[in-house]
Amino acid sequence: MANLPRDLLLDLKACLEVTHGMQGQFMTLIGQMDENLLQLKWGDVSTELATFNEIRFNFIKQLNNKGSIFYFIEQYCEAFQGNAQVKNFHQKLEELVIRDAAGLLKYNKELFDFADAKNLPFIGRKETKKYFYLMFHGDPRVSNFLIVNGKSRTGTSYLKHYFSELADSTKLFRFVGIDLRFDLENKTDELVQSVHIAKHLAITLDMEERYKNLDTSLGKDFKHQSFLTNLKVHLEKSGETQLFFLDHFKDTLADETYDFLTGLAYLLTLDNAPGYLIFAGYTERGLELLEDADIPFDENTLDSFSKDHIERFFEKIHVLLSSNFADVLPDELKTSENFVEKGMEIFKDQDFNKNPNVEPIGKKAKRWYKKLKRQLVLAGDF
Image (cartoon, rainbow, N blue to C red):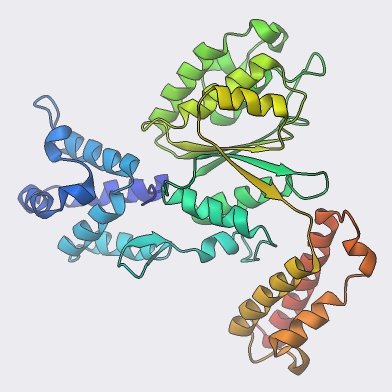
């Protein structure tokens, strides 16, 4: 199972604090749990020098790192369901997760389709969403390190927006986006060097002042291994799962920058600093270095939008609007077939040429949806 996002982990810790006086009941509960499902024994974290609360919080942290936290939560919330705070926490959690056919809790897949803050489905990218869904569930078939391939105009940069929205709407991770073409300051030549990325990360993550004020003229003399060691400590202290998204990962990187990025990828595979790393765009040289580092990674290729992508998008829009505005949806838009046909009228044949540009197609579709939704809101006096 996946990790619990930081805000819910803090909510769980608050529940443990209000049930602190029930140590006997808590230890009885631990003794009744299946250690194979917990993947951890109480004795593995218990020490004579630590208080009961310190041991318990460390126990929870380790369960979260191992991905077995949801099994514990189900047992804990059932045992302490009489406590109002525990009950509220459980209800909040159920908004994020569903129970599968085997009775196990999993993140609701719909969250990955409706990532936008306004509940707008993400157009296409089925394989990308499927990969990310599996990644969050710790599925052994996928790595937490992804390279997104795509030609110009296929929307690799738009994924940055998608993952940012997904972070905001689900709180499953903290999003750290870096555009290697536009976000880095004071590049001294055509090559992106590790010191540029390190300074940007230090500022974004609010690391020590010495790293936020790095002298980017250091170039290849920058000691990136020391920075990565301090970054690891910083991430461990934060307790957050991070997703690093590097856009325009192309042939403008110095060799030592590839070494830096493979070091970052390795760091994110460690238990105490869990995270994900996505590169949008790649080079053959980059792939060689990544493979030499012996860090497992996956590749996902984006294609240009087709009419089929947009039609599937409008089908999802129809389901969404039909459930929320059934009474005021015009008769000519009642059926999915008519709805899709009406939506596709905004496009011209040349919009889907040999190499269609994803961005304007997506913007057209979203503008049509938003205009229609505004009309329905006014008609229904919502």
